Amino acid sequence: MSLRVADPEPGIRLVTIDRPERRNALDRATYAGLSAAFAAAGADETVRAVVLTGAGGCFTAGNDLRDFQDVETDGDSPGLTFLKALRGCPKPVVAAVEGHAVGIGTTLLLHCDLAYAGDGARFRLPFTALGLSPEGGSSYLLPLIAGTKRAAELLMLGEPFGAAEAAAAGLINAAVPQGAALDTALARVRALAALPPVSIAATKRALRRGHDDVVARTLAEEAQVFHGLRRGPDAQAAFAAFLRR
Image 1 (tube, rainbow, N blue to C red):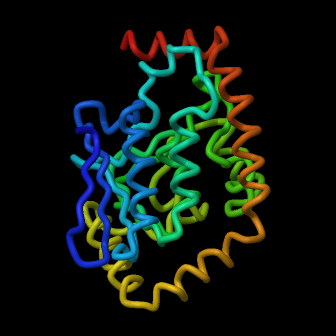
Image 2 (tube, rainbow, N blue to C red):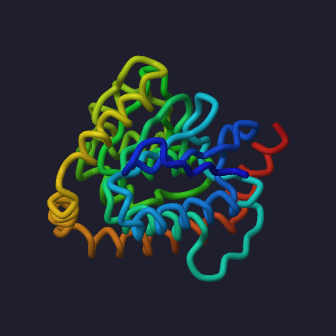
């Protein structure tokens, strides 16, 4: 299994990406599992909050590029389906990041309510280097939280950055000692789970109400451009070169 779903405590759902041999890269099966897990958490009245993390000291290396050599996509891609499920989950979602958070491993944090990262975590938005363009709503949400100049730097240059920089850009709430991200996230969801669920749900809706339509539009528009580029020669050559390494 590429995903583990557990309820370690009453009211808390823990979703763990579990492909350590691939640095938890997200393939079609993992995306499908994540989409189902967030839909199930949203529908389960016993679940008060969700933690998303990765196994083996790594959050996720992003899309599994072996899938990206398949140029055909009918309808929403598995990644876009997952992001919609994540964003649509009515329960608070808290991310716990250790190790690598690459590509969608970084952009998905824009759709979590809270996020914490070990101070050894490394983030990267490598889209331009792969012949691609921003995804995950990042072309709208990242300038909103980080400012246009910092967003341009992160998305255009695509250079790696650490947990302190991720916190300064608003991608995470805080950098914590390495190895402590999951414990920190669990402490936060315990606090959330102890609060009236109707109040938490209403607050989550209120926080997103002003952006929902534009984020939905951005996700669709980004996906169209992204997958057009993904099918192109620059991206396919970049994927092939990466896989040869």
